[in-house]
Length: 102
Image 1 (tube, rainbow, N blue to C red):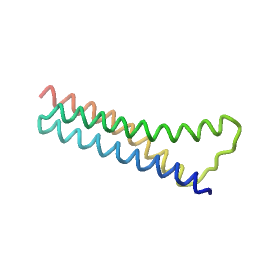
Image 2: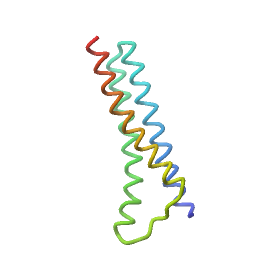
Image 3: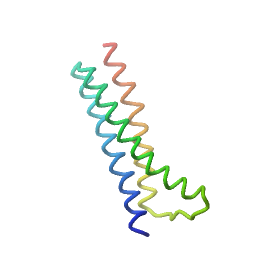
């Protein structure tokens, strides 16, 4: 496993984690009635998530160009974190909408 590969995986993990934290904080803001704060945190989460997707995309582009991409447990963990972050985003949006209607 190369250092570059590990770095890409860690960027996916950390950006996904930061995005997930922002989405969870957005729910808390909505719970308090601060919908502007919630919206700002959702946007912040989206920026982190876009970063995670960007580095993931570099691995996909590498493989698409014919270069073998290593498979490792850290990559599987990174992709799992991205998938759970995507679900957190969807759920946060739905929960915030429910708080708006309250």
